Length: 304
Image (cartoon, rainbow, N blue to C red):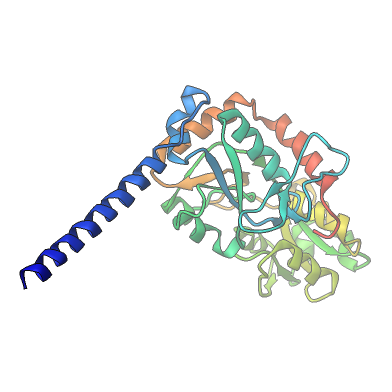
């Protein structure tokens, strides 16, 4: 009986030592990351363990898209970035911008692909630290997000089917009573409401699907930002962008914004401060926005 008790005690002791060793090993492994970059980013770099993890759709050209290789046509100075957990790669405006931030901070860029409808769920779950994808301020998002600085200033447009009578319209009131769609979980429905008696149809998951609905005649019009609309026209010649007259155009709804701003979870002041410093250090401004959006549009695959 005593021997059995001794053996049991010995077994428990060995288990305890093993667990202690595993725990110590984990702590040792976690402590192995050493940051050798600029000191102003050290705290953030340690927080993210050397990786700038961004959450984007990888299906929202020209901001981001999926492609099979790292090659960027006509721009060998750039490379598409691997999509985490996928054999594919991502490039676009977001990747250009994020790679510049990562290089400035001495971090490795890591792209996480997620549907727009679930993009904030992934951020809250800790799958990534920063959301881009042309995201903007809204009162609802402001309850759980902190914003960095503007990385793109957008304006919104209407697209219609090429050859339709709507192609000649130049005022919002001209579109009275027509059917509209846009991407789900955006602030564009608030813009559609500015059209008299507009009829809203179900919103698809992506802008690409909204464009297809217009091209196929399922709806009369779609609303989205100009870069995305222009990108859609390049890959789908059956749609056109409407140029609205200045005093008959969209206005920014109350509580909304047309400034695209990367965002992190509320309260992450370390990330906000570091990313603001990095944006300032790379000299990000309106000229940067125009230059890199032009490159993104020029290099996007026509299938996106």
